[in-house]
Image 1: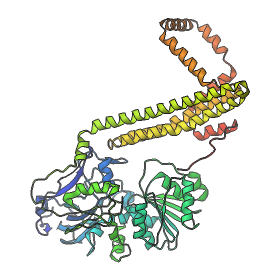
Image 2 (image 1 turned 90 degrees about the horizontal axis):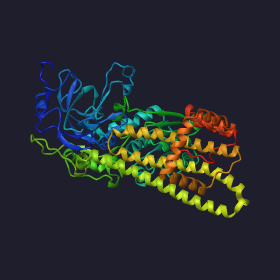
Image 3 (image 1 turned 180 degrees about the horizontal axis):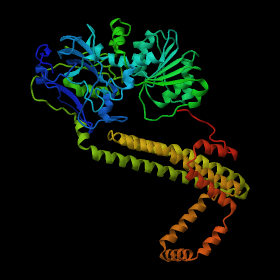
Image 4 (image 1 turned 60 degrees about the vertical axis):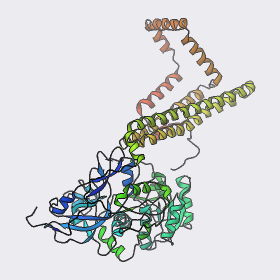
Length: 620
């Protein structure tokens, strides 16, 4: 530090407290850096830094996700971690190297620190910085604390703007970054997918940009009602459980038959992205602001044949000055988005409210010096205000009973949850198989009573049945695996990798089960064979079981195997007697298993022999 004394306002006396989480999904309040003593002396400030007394912080969905899931993609909570990145406050200390800010300035905090060396930084797109430190993204501590040291260059003056609006400049920046890149113009028909906080702010921005007609979609009626109150000129559309293509048709009907030029997708959900692609006009654009799974499917050929541009966004850059001007001049009114207010000491209540979609609160104010609000039903954007009589007292650690219990039994709960999910999936599969076998047995008995007159018809239906069984088995397998995956996902952040592994393996299992079924159809059809009845399979199975249980039969089987092993000539003779059809079928099966052909290649070969695939296709 310079020998020049650090300029400070009144000496702070309250302990610096912060909201923490950890890999065990605990949530508590404890003392944090810088300590109140460091703030008083100014010894913790580095070159170019200021100390901010944080006055307002919004709870983002990512904060709740880091608490509950322990990770977002590769960003994993691995130790005690401070949450929060939507904050505004007052400068209380300034390093002598800082000249454009002074003690008492009201500022909004842009929560990133970049390297200023990589190509994205040097070209002005610093949101792509390869070494960025983004506050609240593990392992970088966040802003949900009373005092924080931050580079002055990332502290933006807000004048007389409320601290509440100052903290909302961060989500506004997310929407503005999307608006700048997608190029919404006056009179453009625009679709906004998702009525969460980012979707609602994007809606306000599109309205200010002159988009019309302007449609916003969501699956929740409460959110759509709030969107209509927030932006009366917007048209709301409730998403139903339809294919993406059919959902897009309904959206276009809501537009009055106009295909949107631009869709701003704010959910990151696969089905929503797909519906947006199907909805936009030829040459239109789907701009994805939302965050989703690591991998998703989308209608590629729809994009290709309609020249639809598909773009994505990562955070923001150079948006804060623009955001400040919009709020200062009343172009975008963010005040209605806040509906709950809590003190920093009540952060646990704030997080529980944010995480519970049933709270259903709209614009509830509490008589506090620094009120905090939260958005509409299920929007959960509480604003945490720094106030309360903590003083110099020792830090107290708060844990909700639910969170503490979950932390103490995390490993046991994980094992138990996985076990229950697996047994549930197994019992479901077993009951499904049993009911299928029972139904097939009754059908076979009924068919047998019709004697040989219905033999040909039965053969054809049996061949078709193999395909239908595998078609229905696919979703059953996928559903069971998804249930297990979701249960595992609740255990902790690190299980995300296991979940991804399971999701990737399920399609392959379904595919090769269908390959086997189709090969069986080919063999039966080519040899003009009638598949054996269920009763025949049962007879063979019961006979084999009795043979295995009979000691004399087991000994005879072992002696036969021994004789065959000692007679290579017998094996060679049996190999020479294999028919051409059996060789072809075995060769095709080996090629499929070893070559790992794609589904498209397999379907292509099936079409050559008369297989035409499923009769319908849904786009999800």
